[in-house]
Image (cartoon, rainbow, N blue to C red; front, side, top):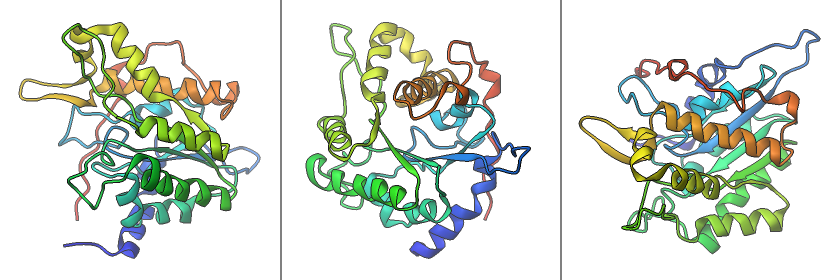
Length: 266
């Protein structure tokens, strides 16, 4: 059964308490804490107990942020910059976002799927067009948009070199960020460099490799923590966040901090 845009938007808003739970802190002086909203796909999304040990990097990001900055993770498996909009999910975010908040946008994994017209976009045209909806929507509400190039898959060539997998999409996002004056987190370049340093064998410990699955796209807890650390460092480097907003950038984060709630029931 397909849901209307209104139904999807209402469901997403209703899920906000779970998204906020990890970092909700009220200011003693009554000021509303800022919220960092994530719009993205399965690489960032909240995972549940039926998917463990698969872990989205958005689940680990709160470990690197101080209590006055909440995370509302709206990333959803399988979505592209287009389908996230078409399903009303961007409307839900923009209905909740407030002045001073942040909207972090990472898409491309599913935009690349040319065989699926409900998700596919072209890098230099429709992909950029859809990203502008996020940028303009956030700015119209006094929030700050932040674009993040897509995290890289685990892909190595015969010589053992990490190979890019996202075609022109990262370049298209970088160009749009420059043109629109939007902060850019180059997660694609930094994650590719990390996989290169680790090598083909060691990277298996960062992806969702289990006894029954060899998944080179999605992360387990160490991988999600590593990518969340990249995101947090980039937020600091790009002056999106100040030093007072981040923590533990050089510390080890225990895998046991990751938890997978029970799946929501209808």
